[in-house]
Length: 85
Image (cartoon, rainbow, N blue to C red):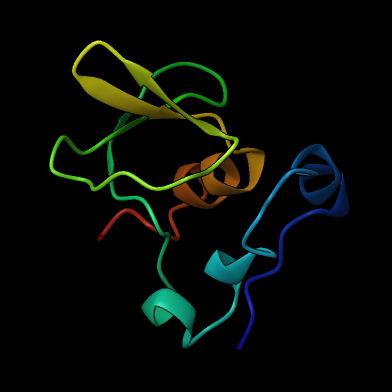
């Protein structure tokens, strides 16, 4: 079962190197690749400190934290899909 995301959100995420793997059940266990610590503003996700580093155009370092600006990831988290990871 795939998670449905509005097409406008998908179009904003035009640099996803993982082909929206977080939307497919069974890939990454149907979970986001990055674990979210908390949300901070529009389309800004603060990642858990213990998260490993990997290449993603929507992920940047900020001080001792990692920040995710992925529109799809933000949509899924704010809609409650990934609150339990």
